[in-house]
Each structure stands twice: as C-alpha cells, then as structure tokens.
Image 1 (cartoon, one colour):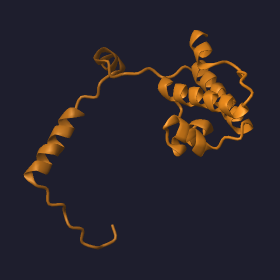
Image 2 (cartoon, rainbow, N blue to C red):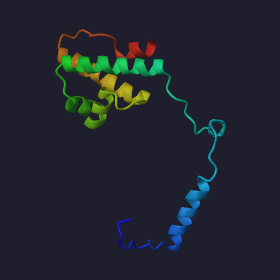
Image 3 (spheres, helix red, strand yellow):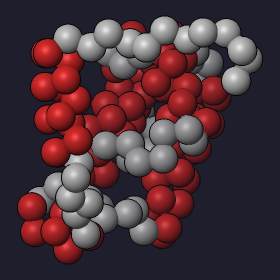
Image 4 (cartoon, one colour):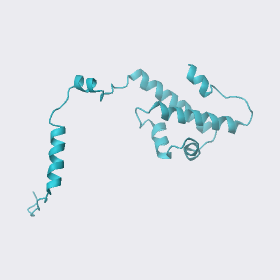
Length: 132
C-alpha cells in the first residue's frame, strides 16, 4: 500500500447483522433453473425482437425530427424524462418496456397529427398498431 495507516472501520452490531444477512442471502448461487422456478428469471431478449424494437424507435425518431419536435416537447407530452427519451432514441436502453414504447409512440403520433394541421392521419394510429 502507500505506507499510511488506514483506520479499520468500526462496525456496529446493526452493521454486522446487516452484513451477515446479505452474506446469507447470497451464499447460495442459484442456477438458471432455480431462478426460472422461482419466477425471478427473465430470459434474454431475442436478437430479432431487439432489432425490431430498434427499428421502430429509429423510425419514430426520424418522424419526430421531420415534424420539428424537440425531445423536450416529446418529454412534456409523454411525461417521460428528456434524458430517458434520449437514451431510448440512441439505443442505450436495450430492453425498453412495452409501456415506454407505447407512451413514446402514441404521444408522438398525437403530436405529429396535431402539428401536421391537415386533419389527416400520417401513418398508422396507435389503435392500428394494437391490431398488428
């Protein structure tokens, strides 16, 4: 080390009990089968599904930009954070929930329709997405 005296932490009885509980909790490393049986295991996302989601998000981003909407506007419409939307659009959120995608897509579609001002639908509506 660097030759300096390092003080040992002074653990309280409560600290020791908490540490012991954590060690006991993780003493048994469950197998994948154990996790599946307990319901705590979520299988990995299949690559086809991952790329389909990425494609949808990419198309929504392009439509947002074409409509002149900022992330701040979409964040206000969806109730989602601007940073979360940015991560979603840049692919840094590898497994977004259906709710997240729905809120982003449905609100974005509504905003595009309002901004277009023509009264005509531009692409599929959220109800049409449900049927597909």
